[in-house]
Image 1 (cartoon, rainbow, N blue to C red):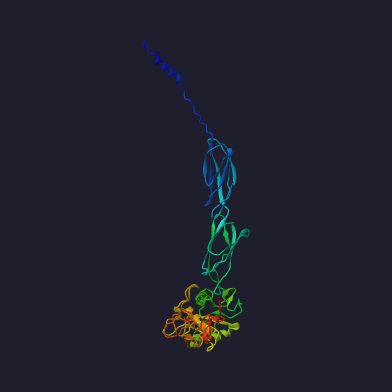
Image 2: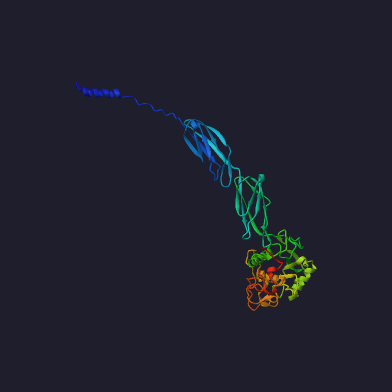
Length: 442
């Protein structure tokens, strides 16, 4: 039988003695997961407070899984949230859930918008002016808007708009349409455009009550008995051409313009149909203006209370595009622009369009009306340094009151400021448009 050394035997015995079975691992879970699911917010960040056992507290801005959560009761509090446009409230502002070891517990937080918004787009306001729009809504809401803007976080409901008229050169401006009411709904933005233009007073065949009782010019849209009524008084066509020459005049005078007959802040244009036909009127030739004035006086347009008339005649004159009196040589209360006038050897008057907007640069028709109005007011007086009979100047074709051999190219009111317009005064007691009672403004 083999014999082993005692030392080797001892090692063998030791190994046998130290051998044992592996210790079992404890796999029972001790924590859980809390899943907070947030929905319904658009452009807003939540601020949800989660509190639980052992002083646990965490604020969540959006959906999140809280792992290793101690088992127990958790409170999920969801306060209101806001985006730039809307307010949001949770369907369940506070809830309690139980987290158990080894499981996932879900807390659902669903938000819904509780307010809406309103965008007002404002266009067409005269340069240098601001709109004044009052927005009225539920619970006494009032806001004043002066330009394009969005009113955010508004209570749902009906909103109304009140727009204050704007006055420019004595002419009233306002939106072409104003809605009766606007509906603001939670979670959406209502939109409304307000486009400003000259206000139309509506057709009138009489002289409505004047806003002021002083020297002024009334605009008349006149047709012969058989003439086509193009509704120029009612479709802003005349308002735009008038606005264009008023703007030009104000630019030449330091802000002064012709005082127009207005009613409730709007230019009071009257429509007149003459008793005579277009052919009969045209037969008067160079005396058509005189006949026009006679007819208008017969219809009651007599110039009472220093009222003068600027007539847009929608008919034919075979001699000129415009004419007016020039007192004292020719007294009168009517200046006329002939929309379908003709001058032998020249293009027809109506090849020159009326200004399409009040902000447009004046053209031939606007300057012609201004030219004839200055005549009616009294210019150019005899004795003016550059006087040319009757009632013109002959020194510069750029002058509004020029008459001469060169083509008329008007752009300046009294080029030299020595003939008929100078706020500082004119020599020799000359008639001065700057002191005319029909001129108003700063």
